[in-house]
Image 1 (cartoon, one colour):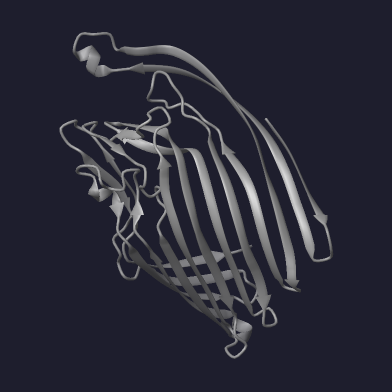
Image 2: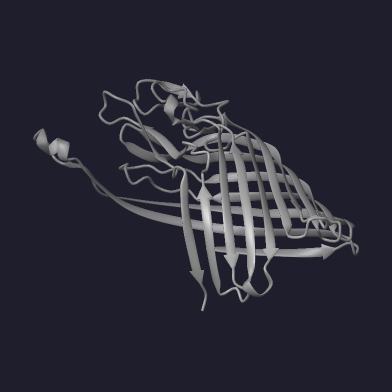
Length: 332
């Protein structure tokens, strides 16, 4: 259950204050039964736990406060503070226990501007995130579980640009770039040393100072499209997209645990291109496309696990290779 309210007060025609709050109350109940075929094969009872009931409740006050100012008719600067919350819960592979709620305090300031008779725009922002009891998924032996890192921080900036130059009618260009610094600044809240077992449970590693999961330091993209008006037969649009993603760590150990280097996704480029015809009434569209033209080999996820216990394996799902195709759309 939750309740919230928000209001904006105009100090002047250009200066505004916005404030809001939210109260959230969560209650979860779980009934867990956990059995083992291996124990039966060894002549023991299969039951590790039978209908173990557990109930947990959490509540949180969160909210936001911001100030924004119109520097010009189509240029706005702002600063914002906000507080967020994610409920705790239970891991189905465990007989008892729960993971804690996650809290986030964020600070952001930036600018949003449109100029050149609406043909150009720029958005830029700097931000700082402070997490407590940050939730993440880890794998130990053959079980996945959500755990908490007691603290983490992330800060950086991002910029977005859009241009439709009058000298080249039909051309639009979009670009974006971001830089992030992220690290776990605290370990396990139940262990003062902040040590976590790796999937093999052979060693316990300190995650403090490691980068956050799936938070690349740099990311950028550039898209361009050129639309040709073919009068009575519709429009023809040629578009191309290029993007670059920095190293991605898929586990809290940043690939430094033994035999787990392959959990790290190296940097990669993506290049896509499309040629699209659309009828004048927009009812029909045919598109020729080529995706991942550089045939980059990259995984959408990688994870280390310990099955059988004498090995540490890394599994992942790879994205599609270089792909060509045709799409046809009809709207009634």
